[in-house]
Image 1 (cartoon, rainbow, N blue to C red):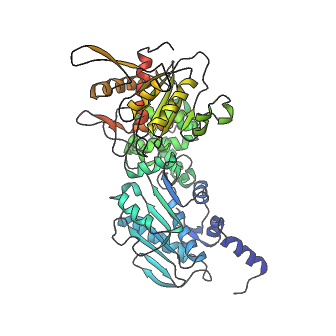
Image 2 (image 1 turned 180 degrees about the horizontal axis):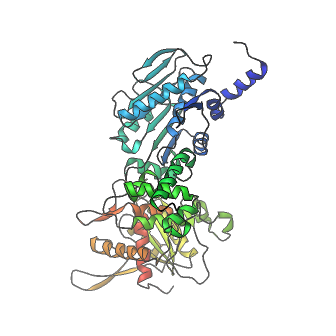
Image 3 (image 1 turned 180 degrees about the vertical axis):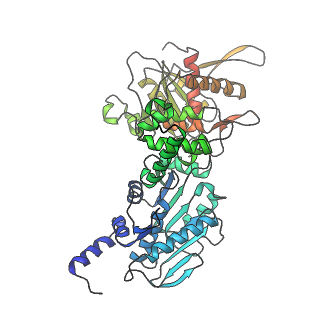
Length: 521
């Protein structure tokens, strides 16, 4: 086939990395919801997804946003633009695997004859091409997944529903080519390994890039569903549609996120048939709302979600606006240290400190609260040794008007307390009154956390949160509150694999606020 110079330039342009969307739009057709074969035109969410891909990616989403279809198209492009490529599409069950392979065949067969490679095999859920490329569709748990292959594009669908997901992911990751891409994509399924990976990615604690797509912004694929829902709603309500005056608090918040009345009528019908918790999980408006905890959660999940909705993205004060920040704190600002409210002259501040050993596991956390119960700043890091944290805490305390410190004595806390008092001469450290074996009252610096005292400070925290007596400005803290539970034995803490360091540091700060602790300097 001879090409004009103009067409040759267009093809060269389409073959370049960064033009994946235009390549797919030019050559691939898909079957739309009306069963018609049409060019692949990307929705805004699909464009954001494809244009934002890194090497490692994790996607939390609402149902049926068409991201799997995107990944099928990307795998076809990979195999044609780069011969000898190997792409792997892994589904959580056989039914889904069959569906993905059907979409793969449909898209592959829609290619122009001159572009579509000849195939060596096109069965058993694998397409092998004469150019050396292949695309394989398999189920999670298959023993031969990734065995012997170097993978250039991998899509793991509904990863939250996989069994032994961590072990399988490790195996697949080892087979990924240096320039390959890995996409983990799923709706939520409670607090599991997918939950952990997603929020670690969101908090920049692993190598993954996080994406979240809610049901409100994904409206373009559901237009007919919304129209039908309006008619059903009108039939049930004397031919009247939903008005703003009838909306509850959550629905009003959804309108602020962009939901239309048509979407809210559709939502009401979904909630009526499956329940609110199920809707939150499958059609979340925020990422924290997606992960429904059915266990004995101590904090009110609905209130957590409501508070998080009210927190703007990147709500901490920019470094350039903090002219008096000490050099030591400036070093960590925007990474481990965040200020949400400017400090005030003459204001009293309280800092709760939960220490770790700084070996990359649990976090050392400082939560700073004003005398009015507002969280004004936080510091967290899991790689700073206790002796180094002591200097940071001393600097933080002085910066916040010589704040009252409440340091838990466990882990690295004892050494931090000793260095604060005797090396840095810090005067305002909480003194806990205790009774020794002779029933004589003694005082010790710092807070001793045991089953009884932990229950007291956590229950005070819960009461303050439920009654609106405190203001939380940290999404990280809210995420920890969501996974903080009480076990059958009565012990309190984060669910397995999660952290509760920010929760404990906050509880320690609120305890000294409640008891009006103050010491002369």
